[in-house]
Image (tube, rainbow, N blue to C red; front, side, top):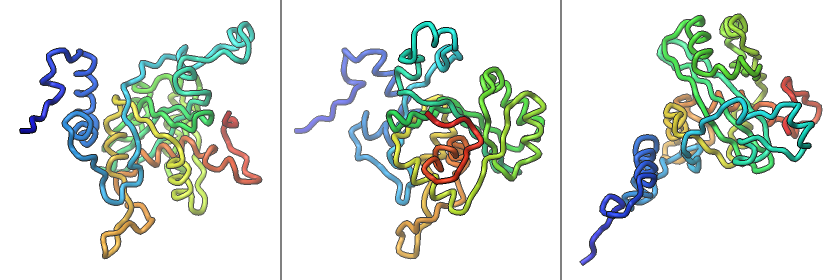
Length: 259
């Protein structure tokens, strides 16, 4: 007789283990069924980012993300911030995809480490049916560090009205450049990295878990992404557009060079 024993049956299971399981149950049901219930790992047919990972939320502060010039001079160039110690040397980024009507507006705040070939999404904003003023005000409350530390916010180039409203409340809002084949180039570059999403970003997790290729008559991926669940992926592409094109000759990114 084979008896299945789960973590809940272990009288010595720690509170930390239970918390990890509950986080997966809430934010990544497929992972929960695979890791904690012993089920087969599920990957949706045509899923564009099947290997993203959900990690615990990062309690980030300005001091965790940045090192002052005074401390840098005092301790030298090898000094690392908290996030650099955990996720590698890199640069903070943010991007905003603007929706209309019932289509969501979505922003991501993240860390890009070329040292470790890793993208970590650490926070998000999601709004539906919001006016430009509401988006700007809610985003300022949700991600105040963008204003406080003057972090460039790269916005859908078609949303010039939103960009103006964002600037009025203090954001360093910039129009994210688009180019021929920018969507597929962005997908390919992001897929070349380890992609981590913090558990406090449920809308981002939802989008990445459902963002898929169009399927042909034989139910096979076509190589063209569906225009659904693309809000968080688009926001990410805008935020790291300079890195996506950093190998192109003659391209001068509008943001500071990636390190």
